[in-house]
Amino acid sequence: MPTKATASTKKPAATKAAAAPAEHVNGSKIGVVESDKRAQTRTVVVNYQSKHPKYGKYIAQRTVLQIHDEKNEARNGDIVEVAPCKPVSKTKTWRLVKIVERRSELAAALKSAKELAQ
Picture 1 (spheres, rainbow, N blue to C red):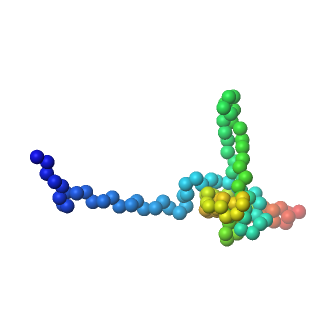
Picture 2: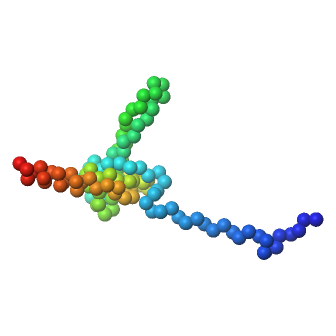
Picture 3: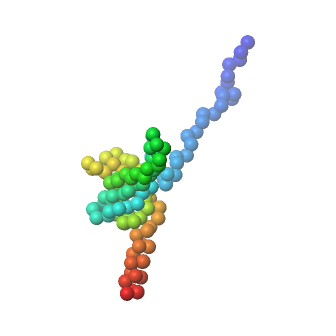
């Protein structure tokens, strides 16, 4: 005859796992800032390759995204991580997660060094 489970024999309820770190967001992409001329808006280019269905050749393609940069941190040439978000405006449905690499500072330093050499 089966016995009834008592409170002491039941397994404790599983606790929720800790949330993922803020750095990684599902659906995020890595791209390069192409334009920083507008307030709180950046144009980011995401390069990728796709395979042609018939011929099998890999084709270089790119996607241009308008992202929301609330603090105006990203500059031209920076490598950034962006994630989808609810629409901020007509064309902006992506937001800046983090700046992966600051290439704008490197470009500015090289430009000033080149000008000094002349």
